[in-house]
Image (cartoon, rainbow, N blue to C red):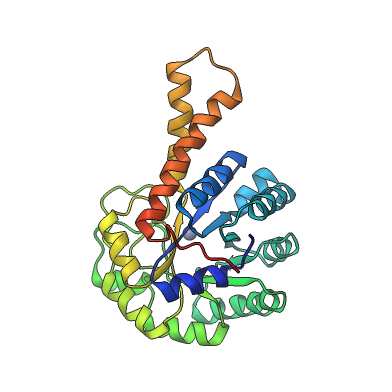
Length: 286
Ligand SMILES: [Zn+2]
């Protein structure tokens, strides 16, 4: 069933677990994510980036994800990851996305509040949930000084001001994760997470969580992270699966026999994330 981001994340917040938000780019990735959610009896967030929408077409994702959600009993949310323009976000809302992210994190606090509030007003009018981001994620390296941390990590007082001013349903924070593949081993600022969660009490989102150690993920979930974005690990599983077939059976040319094993591999990866995040067995019914 298709549900909103708020429905999924409020349940996770209330019961102390995190829901995986998996980026999809094609049918096989979507099927792998839904298969894993059913196997684990877990709620799930399927998300599309603006680039993925450009690649597959908005109508394709609308039809595919609505079909998948309607066919399954587990709660499924269709979410726009890193919406940057008003037009994209409104198009997604028109095409049945049940949750959107407005990424105004490159603006200063005032600017971020302004663009986010505008989206919240429209989205909430039609029952669509909104995630926003405060702090900066990109280019975060392993070793960074305290003053650098204060400059780019999410400031707890600003987070309170931001949430009160905008009325967002969930907040992505910067505590040391980065998008893409890590060079060293990232270390998350758990103290900052703890402070922010205690002040906000609302669903907290972690981006760039591929490659974070299981111990740190478990700790972050315990401290109140309720949505964890995973893209890189699933991409890697897809490519590993495809590569294995092409290397071991170079004469193979049937797309089903090339993409099928990749789909199985992605399903395993997604299911293991669900167990790690504590969402396994948490599927609820309306
Ligand atoms: Zn992100």
